[in-house]
Image (cartoon, rainbow, N blue to C red; front, side):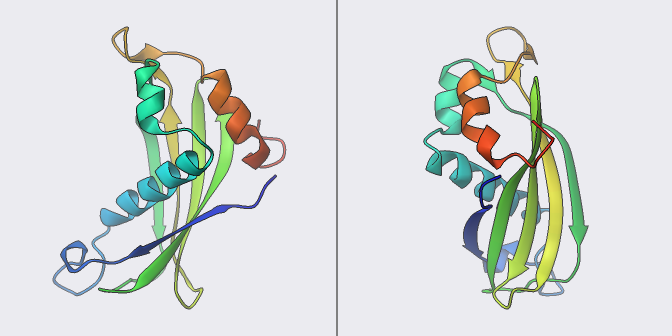
Length: 141
């Protein structure tokens, strides 16, 4: 298994709620940013996948909040490949503050669908499987 991918984000004012902490829904955006940057650094973008007729909609999202993050705080989103199946991939996330303390953890499972046929399930493209295989936790591929 290769090292996790890290992506840094800075909390914008509009992402906070009346209590001055990041609104919970924004963590899904942070995780999506981490995942898309990870794939881009591997040389594959969502746009490229979609041009081949492959869509990756979210099938399941799980979040656990450990502490609040505030405006202008830098967060580090660590992305791993938690597992792959024939027609889905699951990414794991740990979001930490600049001090290294965990803010949130989560997983997002993406289903693979054929964009040309009413979004019916299809196998993950071989290119994507080969790119992600080195990052899959042992025993999950």
